[in-house]
Each structure stands twice: as C-alpha cells, then as structure tokens.
Image (tube, rainbow, N blue to C red; front, side, top):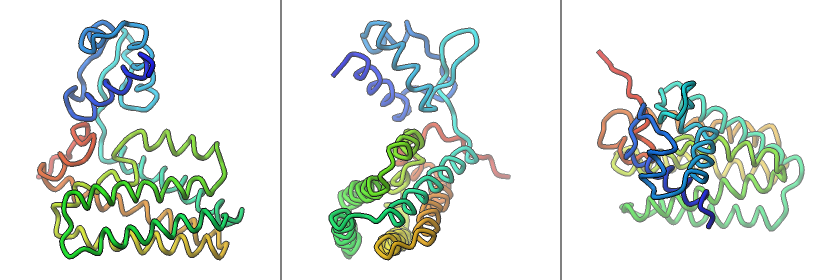
Length: 242
C-alpha cells in the first residue's frame, strides 16, 4: 500500500470516527506529525478528502473538517437516488445478464434470511449491511456504465449518503424491522422490473428506495444514542428545536 493511500485511509478514519472535530483546522505539518508521515503523501491525502467533501480548503492555506447540515445530507441522498435510479433503468433497458440477475436473487434470499430472524443481533445488522452493499454494487455493475459508477462512488464517499449509512443506527429502534422489510420489498420490485425490462418502473422504484434514507436520517437525529452509530455522524449538525 502506498504512503499516500495509507495517509488517506488513516486521516479519513480520524474524521469519520470524530477524532477530528468539524471546523478543526488541518495543515500539512500538523497532519504529517500526527500520522508520522511525510508531507508529500499527506498533501495528496488532504486534497483527495477535499474532493470527497470531508474537508474544506481555507483561502489562507490548509483545510478545515467539514460539518454537514441536514439539508446537505438530504441533497446527497437525493443525488444517490437519482444516480441509482438511472443505473436500474440502464440495467433494465440494456438487458441484464442471467448471471447478474441470479446474483441479485441470491442476495435477496440471503437478506430475507438475515431480517427474518425472530430477534436480530448487532451481528445480524452488520451482516445485512454487507449484503445490502453487495446488492447495490451488483445493480450498478448491471448498468454497464463506468461513467455512472464513478459518479456514484463520489456520492457515497460521504458515508451517511451510502445505501447502508443509517442501518446500524436502526438496530436500536423499534421501527427497525418494518424499515428493513420495506427496503427489501423495494429491492424485490427493482429486480422484477429489471427482469421484465421495465426501465421506467425500475428507475422510479430505485429512487423511492433511496428516499427511505430520509426517514432513517430523521430517526437517527432524534437522539444522540442513535446518531453515534452512524458512521461520520459526528460531522452532522443537529438542528436546534424550540
């Protein structure tokens, strides 16, 4: 692993785990000292994280850790939904392979098993996160669009905009099973629409599926006990309510 990639991964982890606070100023020297790395890979890592949206450049030099408003997160979720909707339409209209559809159906079955247990444990939720991410990744592959794949990758670089951004926070909520069941039915509908080559329906279902994240965001913001389970949750600005 290159020094730049190592610095990038370590710095991203510090930000997402809340060890670097929103608004905190970062310079090449301070980050290099903290990571015990040379300035050249640190400079590249800082620039990359600014491209991902986790850092903001300062005109006078250096960067600050970005804080995200609810509106920004909702916008990011909408962008992901639009792009994934387009991916579903491409997959339907271009004719997904039998092998690809079989992979999606296999994942549907494994997700059914994960959420069908009488009582889901933390390990079950973690397993669901992995399966859900695989489902979305396979769907994107079936679109056969490298351009679209790159755009989705840029959006989900913000962890709370990813398909599984709020799943672990749901685990402590009584609504968890209802939400996961609803999401799974939408998965099933998307696979059916792609199989039947119904592009418009596949796109609409996938966009609606992404909007479940808006509900999950609202649930996570209800209290700090759930928000801390969201990766990158420390970067989210909570609105003060009277």
